[in-house]
Amino acid sequence: MKTLLLVLLAILAFPLLLASRTLEVGQGAAYANLQAAAAAAQPGDTILFKAGTHAGGQYVEGLQGRADAWITILGEGEGAVIRGGSNAWQLTDPAYLRIVGISFGGQTGNGLNIDDGGTYDTPAHHLIVERCTWLDINATGNNDLFKMSGIDSFEVRDCTFQNGAAGGSMIDMVGCHQGSFLRNRFERGGSNCIQAKGGTSDIRIEGNTFIDGGARAINIGGSTGLQFFRPLGINYESARIAVYSNIFVGSDAPVAFVGTVNSEVVNNTIYLPQRWAARILQETTGATFLQCGDNAFRNNIVVIGNMAANPIINIGGNTRPATFAFANNLWFHAENGSWSGPNLPATESNGIIGRDPLLAAAPSDFALRTASPAIGAGLAVDQPTHDYKGRPFLPNRSIGAVEGGTSTTAVGAEHEPQSELQCQAISTPDQVAADIRLSRAGRVELSLHDVRGETIWQHHTDLPSGHTRLQLPIAEAPSGFYLLIVRLGSRVVVKQVVR
Image (cartoon, rainbow, N blue to C red; front, side):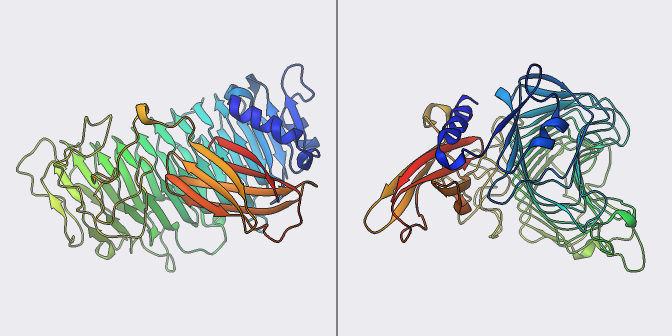
């Protein structure tokens, strides 16, 4: 956090961002709460919550930055806690908004509630929620830690969700699109950790950890009143939901396909579910409503014990289970050496049944031991490209969430570079480039600004670990000073570029 604050100070000191302001919230600060600060906030501003406990129950409508000037809500030292209220915050129709380092807890309704104001004509859009924590919720019904309705183009990354309501979801999406959930941790869910319903589509759930995730750790679909679908008239609960490189420990069913189409679960590790390894269900029906089908389950490790329910795959009515594609999964019964395998509704190609995947020190570390039959046995697929630990899968990929091939080496703590992100700006007569070095693969955000504060270039790209050189598009720009801002997760580097 110290690094981030120093970077923010450096940015504020640079001429291009002199117009941006930091609006402090808390005891003795200029603003008493979020509503007051949001009323004064302009694109590019940062609303800084001072460390300590702040009252929930805040409603804010239309908090919108711009594509070149996002508004940031930031927790000082990541020690700001929003406690109590029906909702901690309800944000209606926000856009270009980043929420970083805030904790939520003790709400009686929903924790954080972000919506489109009840009409998808103006969806909430371009949101990033990063390094936030949900501690608990003071409710046991259909109450969600993070409720999302009508949100497009978003990321939720590096967050922690704990102690969900017994009848609710940790994250509940209704009619959300083009989003991703990356490297989050979910512990002790209620009904679900992540639920995608009401016409939700094109969502990527990757590199997350689910520990005792409740009834359905990931509910790919669900049940929603048709009047709440976004947009209205969609005839599926969810579509094109990608579940990649996650680790699941426990829960009644780690994955449930419920009224979803064209979704896939690939390269995950599922360890000791309590009732079923997966479910295929339909909860919303109608003459024009699509039945659950045309989904895929590939390259997953499934380790089961003596579960409370049988069979391994629970199949409900009004579904099309025969249209599911099963391939290259490893199925192992840890307590029954003569187990004949799962009750799959369609023939699996290249499945491995009854062989111990040799997980290292499971369940604390799901790396594959050298002799694991999962190594190199995966189906060749385009996605995911990286495993649970952020390392690239090999051409002959392993089954499960963690690549076990010998040419991909884990980065141990003793070998960790001094910084996850290093960058140098290189100027030559022929080009201006950024030399970026990463200790782990990840999505890098870059932006370039001139001395007047104008954003002249923005770019997001997935980079591998190691060194990458990116050419900056200012070779023909006027001579002078520019500022390059590079971000990898919580790491930010600011470099002055001379042209």
